[in-house]
Image (cartoon, rainbow, N blue to C red; front, side, top):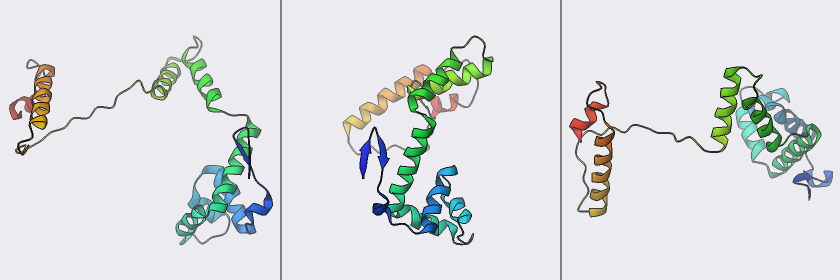
Length: 165
């Protein structure tokens, strides 16, 4: 196997795949759905998922798929940088629709990890810290922060937490 410009090129002698395995690789890169690729290349629908899993576990198949994807990427001249440039051009375009620009900014923000996913945690019962002072201090800091963030003037389910803490 030879690596050139981040693309994988392989000698056919390294692969030694039978025609059905080669076809599976070609079908797989169409939609990256292994079960459907197995069905399209002739495996039974009943066993296609098992066969697909078995085929994908084969290192020779993995190498062939990587080579095909690298070849397709080279031929289509698509890179992550070009995709980001395209998204940015839509986001910053004054001619694009408002919703398209918002989606562009959303995708760029996700790529740059600008957004933080938050989740609400509710707890019923007692907290057993077993004498661990660090856990207790952390709990008190979190409790204080939660109490500061709650607004007593707004009715809603979040105000239940204040009574629990």
